[in-house]
Image 1 (cartoon, rainbow over the protein chains, first blue to last red):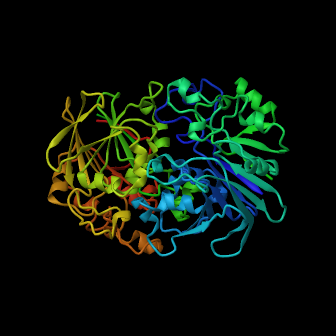
Image 2 (cartoon, rainbow over the protein chains, first blue to last red):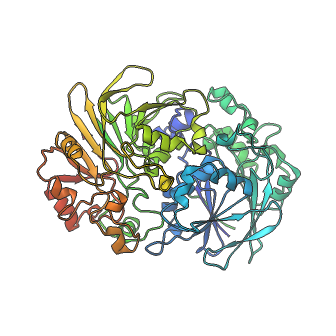
Image 3 (tube, rainbow over the protein chains, first blue to last red):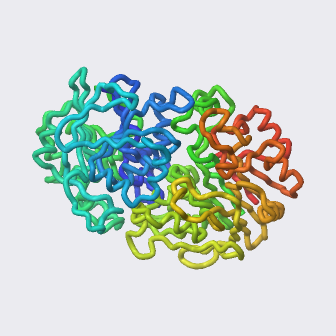
Length: 307
Length: 307
């Protein structure tokens, strides 16, 4: 399985447009050992021809251009056979509206995520310009389905979605919809020929038996690396909310993911969806050293993995 | 007046994600004399401190980062004092949703454009997270208003909007709303200290007395450069629509803008909102030579003008 990280940052990217905190300043003026990162999006393929995107970031145009395997091979063409959504957050979905040039799309999501994006969203009409412009394929919360090529035929990959603790997207809060299963999922993507498994969990509010079990059986795990600490934004004065209130289990601390996943059998483990405040972004920080010495890597834009 | 082109392309940018026509291929493989371009957005300032954006492209995050004058000077800050919308097309408005990190915004538009963006658009709730997150300031179709700093005080710039023939955004077509005044405007931006005038007309379906008159009194004119010819997309097989059906007066031909504006007294005239199919993008094309010999320039990302 071929994996390419197109974007590795949380919503807002790094630097974030209205932020001059240490990390963002360091990227801008080059004074710190830190790289610029666009918002989370990962491309996956078995054969290197048919590609699937995990999430659709607002920066999808530049991300597609950054990776020649995703360039079109004809006047109107794209090697992108489908887009899988892990939740309805705008940093995961807004990019769909940038793929609007009368091109057929296949989007895999839970029914909850689909409804959250298409209902009461007049902008979505830009993807309804001809019958069949978007084919939604439901990700069931149990059971594996094949990832298809749009023209028919197998891509050589299958996916299983599983509920992961998360929350409604901010723009859907307060509308009276019950938070529930399917609003946030992890993805287990399996290459049919090799049996190799990628588990993708870019938003996890807390570990459950199901998330731990899926993570423990992965050949490669991408995991929520949004925050280092519970009070990261509060200490900066950037938000009133804790990491968990934003549905992100922090990396560090006694109850963080680094400690909780220490025992899992994981050949390849990568933190992604990194917020611009996270000290692991600094290549010479003690937090980065702690993560790397525990066997984790920090995702960066352009990172490639052959699984 | 300081003017910086952040993005110079029409919707889709150049290259466009699903297009392998000559220009897009030429950018990707470097085989042609053509530059990459992001989608249309221009920054304007009198004092170099308070900036206003003309339109909010989907690529606004990268565009802000590309221009140090727009970088924040504090933990949560932005020199962007306001955003002016010329119509409701997604390539002009989608970027608003990328400026959602709990930051107060001032958006100037006609009432028609405001309604088209905020009504029946659940995604807009991300900009309604606290009272006063977005302050809409109505652009009247007659009369000059001052561009204010958000904290109060003058920016040293004023704006006058005027109706320009255009059309409803694609995603609002067929909803029964009457096409009418205010759905597409030109902007006349005046620097109070010098009296210098920028006229901004990035979408013009046809010339009217009002557009000709405004253009003729500009010190600097940005004008609709979407297409070279009426049948540009049809000839490629990329669309059934003509340039005029898409509300863009072509540059070339007997009835194009190059001929129509030949007599106007215009010290500085620039084509912008350039579609990726337009031959003027090729620096050694006959169309580029024709445009330049008539005194026009072709906008490029990063272009700066001191007016």
